[in-house]
Structure formats: structure tokens, C-alpha cells
Length: 533
Image 1: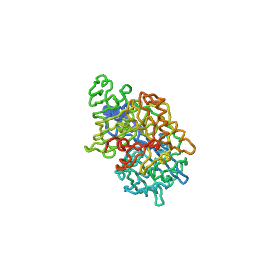
Image 2: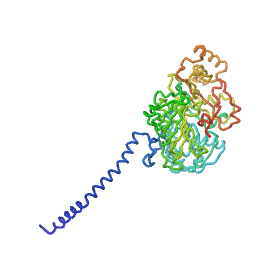
Image 3: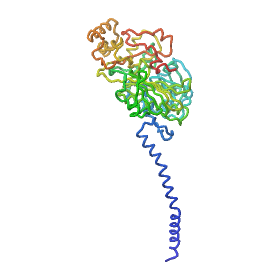
Image 4: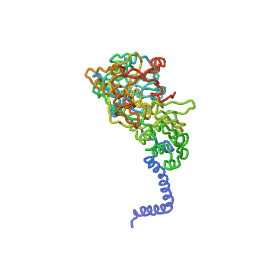
């Protein structure tokens, strides 16, 4: 054997002795790594099986990156508009169309919101001029925190937007650069701030949309309407929906599970108290009334590891997912829509959710909301719900273009036109508005689809139509298509006035049908989620 081979043999023998001496340490080390991986893998597995909000786990195990186009953000706009040098493009009350426009412009919105300086109050004249520039515009239903929308779009820093809530956000390009405008949906206050975006990105964003016959109220100089109201080209049709109280016959197991109850055990030991069915499981209690009203009390739903704005963001996300699961469980056919968030006098964070059907907001006339959640340091402790099922009656109704509806207004007001289903939350009663909606539908369809678009119907003509409908339906006043398992509702235009209590009181009356539109009597109750303040 040569000398050159000896070091290799000695090295191999040394390695063999080292492994023999330390093999138990290596074996234990491998076991430790494998055992440590088991909880993490279990969490990842259960995340796929259970809703996140049912797990009280560390934030880093539950969080997932939010994409710019994630519609689980909490709510989508109900209107989108773009103005380029070629004209105006608009889409509204169309969930797929609005979502697509939102996704196609998300990067530009993120740039603008990320670079925004602190907003300051501006005038209607300035706002109106900005609406004549090249622009992007989104309108939300409710009072949505601007910082939250910015976070959903991926903005890293939103502290300058902390005091802004909106209905409408506009990115306008003027000779001085780019400006953002925020209009609060409750007070009507308009705030402005300078910002910056890449010129080429903005140009491509606005020019990708071909003008489609839409315009803004500022173009038409309609004094009675806010200048940012989108005038659609017309031709929109929507389903007539039937609403009824949720009684717990179908889907209650999924509802209870969503709120963290062991559904099978809770249902087995359910009891009745005060006219409500009471379900109890661990620290969770769920009470359901025969009219669909429900109350939850408990602890353990949510994630409390975050702080500040991130904590509020997580609360809204938890409420969104919970609302979506509830709507799916009861078979409503609607999707969640954020209405409002605020901190109450006790320091608890309140999240109010409504719902939309095919992009059209739905208001519960009795409660003013679908669900109101109370969070304490990131954990859901209380919820109040007004659960209503909804399904199409199989009928559709043509909706008058906004321009004609605005022209029918007989009073001046800084207001917006809003198409909405207003569910009267009554099981069988058929009031005046229901009768009008059905009786006038045929006559209105003909008028609204006319080439000249003359939509005005006289009071006498409307009365004649209503009388004919009553005669055909019999003494109950129920229309031919009325679903007697619930209340049938057609979407109608409503005039929603900005924060002017005196003006609202002066116009606090139902408009006669020849005005087509209706003045909403309680803006905060319906649009802002009940009596929340």
C-alpha cells in the first residue's frame, strides 16, 4: 500500500468513529426538526379545511398576501368611469364589468394613493373643474375608509389618508399635474390632495377604455345632481327580486359553524326563549328570531396579533368572510358589501355590512343593514344580523337612464342618484311603492325604451295603471307576479342627499310617480348602516 493512500484511510476511519460517537445526536436532531414541522403543517392543512376566523392563531400563520385585484378586499365600487381625450367610458351596477375595470386600473390607483399628500377641504367649483379633465373615478356605496381601499390595492403607507372616508374617489390630470379628490358619502365634504403617477401608465389606463355613450352630470350641467353622477347610455334591465325572512330551516348548520359553534351539538340542545331559538356552544351563543333577526355573542373569532390600521383591516376582512359564508349558507344569492366602519364610545371597532345583488345595493328598510359586527382588540364579541333570503321572481324590469331621472327632479339639491333594491322587510304586505313598481313597469318600459326617451308619466296616467293592476290582482292588491312567499321588489332610482338635514326635512315626502325618483327619508339609516354614528 502506498503512503499516499494512508491519509485517505485514516480520514475514513476518523469519520466513521465520529459518526459512531455522535449518531444519537444526529438522530435526535432530525427528530426535533420533524416534530417541529408537524404543528406548522397541521396549521396549513386546517387553514384549507376551516375558515380562518374560526382559528385563534398567531397572525403570521394566518395572514396571506393580498393581491391588488383581490375582490375579497371587502367591497367593490358600484360605479367606474374613465375620461380620456376621446370621451367618457362608464360602467355601473354590473359586478363583472366594474371588477374588470378595477383590476385594469389597480396599479395606477395604487401609485396615486401611495404618493398622496395629506388631503384638505376644497370647493364644489374646483371639484367640478377636475371632473372635466382626463380622469379615473370610482364610486362606492356606503362610507368606506380611504386608507382601507389603499391597503387593499397594496399601498405600503396610508397614514395621510387616515381621516378620509369616501363614496367617491377621483384621480384627475390637470395642467399642474395629478390630483386626488375624495367625496364623503354622508356629509358630502370634498377633499383634495396632490399626488403623482407615471404619465404613461395613466395614459394607457384611460385610453384602454373606448367611449360608450356615457357622460358625467358636470357635462350636462344638471343643477339638481352632484356633478360626479355617471349618466349611463341606458338599456339596463334588472331582475325583480323576492325577499323573505330567514327562518333557519335551511343552512343553519353552516351559519352556526361560521360563528364558531359546534353546530351538531348546538342544534341538538337548542331551546326557545323570548321568541328566539337559542343555540349555545362553548363560549358562543347565537339567537335567531322567526323574522330573520339574529344576535351573536362570544369570543374566539378573529386575530388579535395586529395593531392599529392593520388590526382594523383584519377586522373588516374577518367580517367580510363571515358575511359571505352566511349569505351562501342561507342561499341569498347576494354578496357582502361594506357600508361603514367606526370606533364606538367604548373603543370597540364596529364594522357594518350590507349586500348587493348583481352590483345593485340592497337596503333593509327595517334594520338598515345586513350585519353589524363589534370587535374588541381584533376579536369578534357581538353581532346583530337581519337575515333575509332573496331570489329572482323570473321577471325583469327596464330601468330609466339617469339623465332622464335627473331631468324629472323638481327641486334643487346636491344629491346623487342611486339605483337600489329597498327591501321593506315585511313578509306579506304590499305597500304603495310595490304596487307602483309593478303597475307602472309596462308603461314605464315603453316610455323608457322610446327613441326620444320621454320618461315622464303623469299622475293621472299612473293612477290609471295602478287601478288596472289592482283590478287584475283582486282585493289583496297583490300583483300578478308577486311571490307570496316573500316581498317582490324592483330596483328603483333614489335621490340621496348629502348631509343637509334641513333640506332633507323640507323634501321629506314621497315623490309622486311622475317624478319617477324617490327622496330617501333617512340617509344614515339605510345607506350608512342603521343608526350608526
